[in-house]
Length: 114
Length: 112
Image (cartoon, rainbow over all chains, first blue to last red):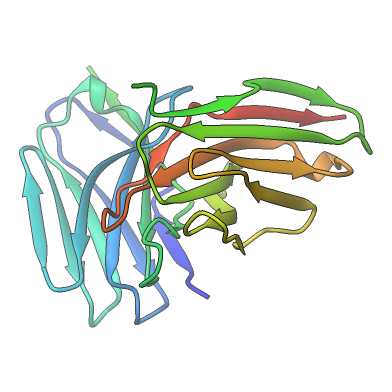
């Protein structure tokens, strides 16, 4: 089955700096790569996703890049703010039947210091 | 519109006891899922139901059973709880042709 590795496990930045989180996946059939944000004590929520036919996607201060050849994808957050502090999870899916059948990475605890 | 609702939010069990986690969604979604979240291990899929009337094992199904009662409801049962099942459990749903998972608030289970 699919295996997703996520790094780093913790990331600490100053407000205004950029943050980058990286993930690798093992199943070359994977074609959908979402990122979820989970604030402390809350439920995970989708912040951005990318499909295998796209190399990069951007939404305001967040962007995701995908390298299918190397089987890795990354989340980039620019101009970080304290409210960006949360746990971020990458995930991958190759299911053609049920797209929510995701394999998640281990999570990255992002702390943005004011 | 409540989205995905899970009950109970907190539960303490003794080893060997049984319990059922309930989940309901009001978004008319076809697919529903149960994940468990443990520190340093991300979210792992226990069971899922692609559509009403079907259920399939995920990554970590041992010790659990599920029932897709109808399109709205998907329950997770622990028949004989073990300390290794101490975790936070999330129910989620997704709509036809939509890849986004909508999660419930989570259920924190402690097995002593």
